[in-house]
Amino acid sequence: MLFILFTCCVLLYQFADQIAALIAAVRKIASYAGAETLYIETVLKAVGVAYISEFIANIARDAGQQALAAKMEMAGKIIIMALILPILTLLIETVMTMLPGR
Image (tube, rainbow, N blue to C red; front, side, top):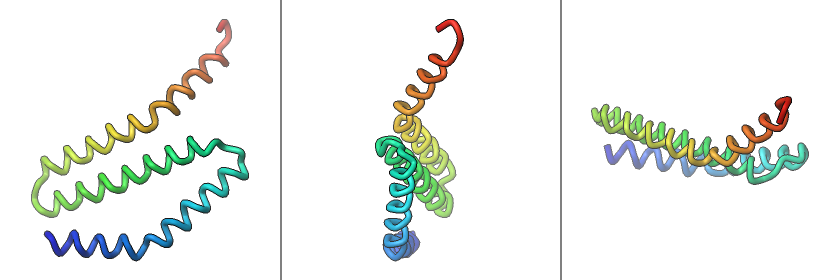
């Protein structure tokens, strides 16, 4: 299992330049669109948490730890919900202002 973890870390390190270029491209597109960077960064963090939690869950599954994998996936989902809560609140407030009679 240590070998698998080491191999995955090496692969992640090799893809770091491409990931940085992708993040820079997303930020550039967001600046052209006039989107606030807070929202873009929050979405990028949520995507990162999703990938990391899935990665950890897959390692746990490979090690035969099904229950631990399920708990890691659940923890990732909870962290993502906590990250996007401000965006979700703003979205609900925006919809409420658009409703008639408000």
